[in-house]
Image (tube, rainbow, N blue to C red; front, top):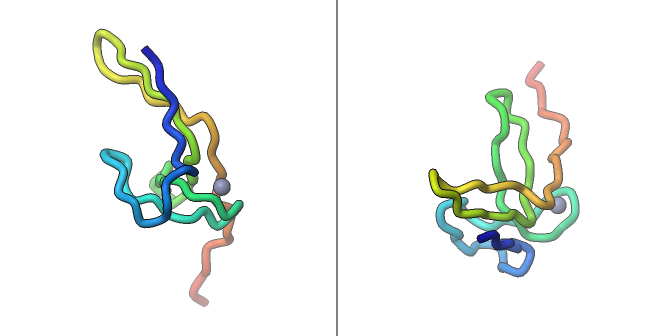
Amino acid sequence: MQYIQDFTSLPAGTISWPEGQVERCPMCGRTGIEQIISEHGARVFVHAQSSEILSDGMLVEPQECCTVTEVPVLVP
Ligand SMILES: [Zn+2]
């Protein structure tokens, strides 16, 4: 069974378990869940994801997300 979770329908500040807090995406202005995808601090904002219950666990796949491309501030 697969279902789609749409974070853009949730207001900023909502806590969605287990993903975290819903915040406004700096790239498109819609709401989503911020996720750190690498140890270098690369971030994405997930706006919608699908979840599927499998016999050995749960498969979660982002359906729609923005990659946050702000340039990190480097201290001289
Ligand atoms: Zn976005």
